[in-house]
Amino acid sequence: MKNIFTLMALIGLLSMANAQTTTMENTRRIATRGYAEKEVTPDIIYLSISLREYYEKGNVKKKVTIDKLEKELFDAAMKYGVKKEDFTVQNIYSYNVRDEEKKKTDELLQGRQYRIKVTNLNNLNPMMAELDAEGLQSTSVGGYDHSQKREIEKQLKTTAVKDARANAEILAAADSEQVGQLIMINDNSNLNWNDIMPQPRAYAMAAKTASADAIGGTAESLNLEVRPIKLTCNIDAVFEIK
Image (cartoon, rainbow, N blue to C red):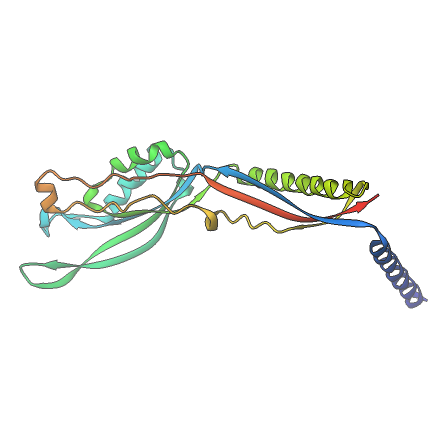
C-alpha cells in the first residue's frame, strides 16, 4: 500500500511539472537585457612588503635582524590603524651575502614578506616613513577592495533588473502591449574586483645603499595613485506580456 501511495505522489508531481511547462510554453512573453554601471574608487589596499636582514655599513658584527625589522613594521602598522588580524606573513626566505674579504658566500640572511590590509590610504606614506629603509627590500600593491562591495553589487543588480523591465516596456509598447510579471532572470555579471582593478600605481621602494647613504640619498617614497574603476552588471530577463 505504501508503494502505491508513493507512486501516486510521484505521478502527481510529474503532472504538475508538465502542466507548468505547458503553461510556460503557452505564455506570451518578451525577453530583454538589463544593464547598469558605476564608477567606484577602491578604499582598501592590500600591500605587499618585503624586509631583509642587513649588516650596518657592511660590518658583519652588526647585523640588523629580521625580528627587529618586523617589529618596526608591525608597530608602525598598528600605530596607523592596521588591525592585528590584517597583518600577516606571506613568505619566509633566506639569501646569501657576499663577503668581499673572503670572496665567498657563506652567510645566510633572513627575509620575510608581509601582506597588510590598509583601509586608510592617508596613513600609508606616514607608516612607510617609520621603517628602516635599508631593511626594506620592496613594496607592491597586491590587490584592491571596497568596504561597501556587497552593497554596490546589490545596487548594480537592482538597477540592471529595472533597466531590463524598462526595455521590455519599450518593446511591448511598440505593439500596443503591456508587460506583466517577471518569469525568468539570468545574472550574467562577473563582478570579480581583482580582475577589473586598474594596474597598481605603486613603485618598488628599494633599500638605500651604503653609497647613497653616504651622499645623503634616501629610499623612494611610495608613489601610489588609486584611480576609479568602472563596474558593469548585465542580466537577461523574460517578462510576461499581458
